[in-house]
Image (cartoon, rainbow, N blue to C red; front, side, top):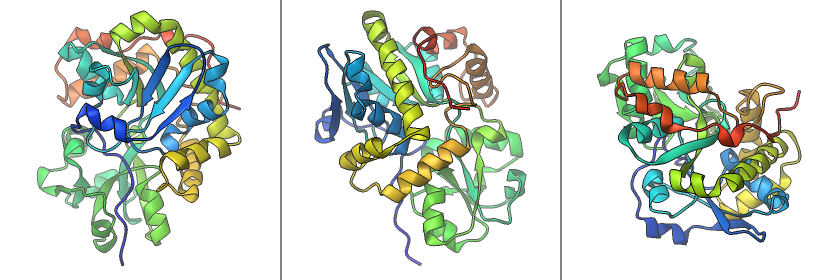
Length: 333
């Protein structure tokens, strides 16, 4: 069996020179105001679909915003690029926002794409409970070993000798019936399905590892200087996400495939369905892209208990709710 390497992002980002951004495609929605740039955390895919949909449907232009979507890629240090002014908004993870706050980096989360993380573990179908993986080999990236793996070890009693390098390749999983691997709900399961490999998938969020997925981060300087524009951006984006997941996604998909020709139409359909199934945008009636204090506190407490961050009251500066208080589209009933 020959399986392709997976077209997907790592759990966290590595290092990339800021100048390399100029070689990646950009999608733009024009208007009369100063440009506002969004840097995604990977090549264009369904997890960015709402932003592309908002651009293609003219939702940013309706808010008098000139928005450019800069496609990310592997080994990019999103915090470094944001702080260097290479973008106005960067898609990152909630855990990174907390680390920035504790380290005194002037970056702040202003909204979140998903109400939960979309990462998890993919196992063979005989595994019905994650606790059954004790003693099994598990493919984990180096970034994953420094984050959710530490939490998994503490919660389930896993040991370090279970970890094997994750190389974005399904072959080790396919040929070893004992093996499990880290996965994203819309990526590795899709590859396994296409290859005819039976599997079970366990979302980390469902296991108790609380997270916000694809958080929007800005510098504090940008927040102070362009707050009204950022609120408009999130309001327009929330409507874009509503249309992309629950409406006609054809324009968003076309823009994604133009930016990333390696992305198939079939995978985009699969990904949207999975995001809908796990209620990534929230429960029916909930504001899209919103955040709240209780969820952030839970994320911090989990990171603290797993000793992924030190105890520090400065963590509360990781986010602001000012940009998600009103004007947001809601999840259809």
